[in-house]
Length: 265
Ligand code: NI
Image 1: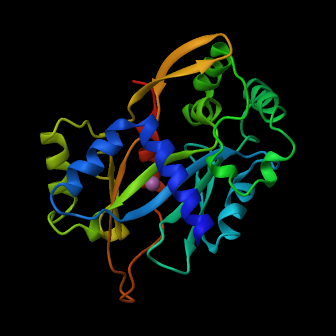
Image 2: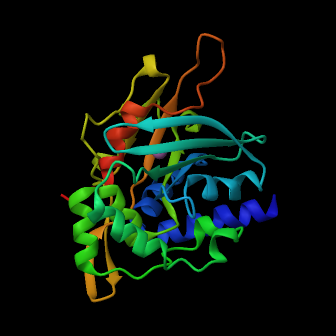
């Protein structure tokens, strides 16, 4: 468990260093006497077998996680797997990958050139999910990728790190529901992602989620710096299924919209 805690701590420290707004929200909620429980962490990669979602997911399997759900996101051309730990107090892990087979030569050749730069031993490292960007990329390549897929551009610019952490709204005591939390965040000056409505999903889906808009950060490219959207903070409220168990999965049609939280505006 120590190694898992190390990995989660590194992911969190890196995430809040890159996204100060997430730490501000975390502290603002905890200043009400709350203790934030993390529902899930999301990671992104390219669907290249050398560094695909199974390679990232395996690092969590080695630390006690098991795959529990498989998802296809048609609009965004993604596959994803969610993992759960036997200890339910540990966050779920959601790993997605961009399907390269549905794109043309332009995107595929840039991605291949990036993945070719990954050191041979890196995919075998236990801490791969928190190692950051292992390749060099030019601004032009980044812009070209962005024209094809915002997701591809994000992975190319940021590499292996958490795309988002997620507040478990069920575990909050001072907010009755997600609309109340959203209102609180907006009253405190935080912008929410409104693509597809502020709240994605419904009690009928057993999952409601909202998220902030990603903050912008300056990223170093091979030939200069560019200010681009980094990560968002997510909020999830889960419902009981008719079986009496809480729904622990994900809803593809909602996530399709949530993925847009890192799109350039
Ligand atoms: Ni999420």
